[in-house]
Length: 127
Image 1 (cartoon, rainbow, N blue to C red):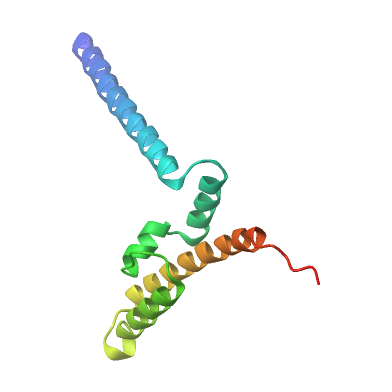
Image 2 (cartoon, rainbow, N blue to C red):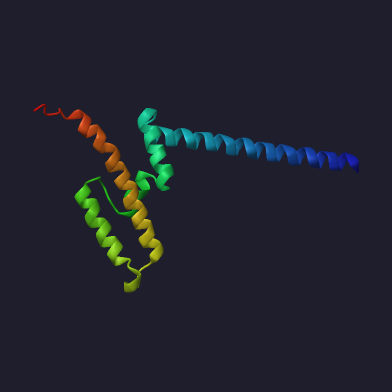
């Protein structure tokens, strides 16, 4: 009887160990893929920090606002339209409205982080 219990315990540990190893491999692969998509290096670190602070990735924010490219005027139009359509007073959803606001905030962070690069690349007028 003790022999069977020991075999069951050993089998259980093996199954759990294999599942843990598989989950660990998947997590490492996902982490590497995310780092690759973020661009790696300082750009990847900057993007990861922005994602963490807003809770959304840039790709998610663009999907929420249904954007193909980052154009400030286009972003503003999409944001205003979706925010108005989802107004609770008009039968919309407060949850969706808050997701739209968070998406706009994430895209605004991206615009602000691109501004300093553009200012640095432009020559200063020495009058």
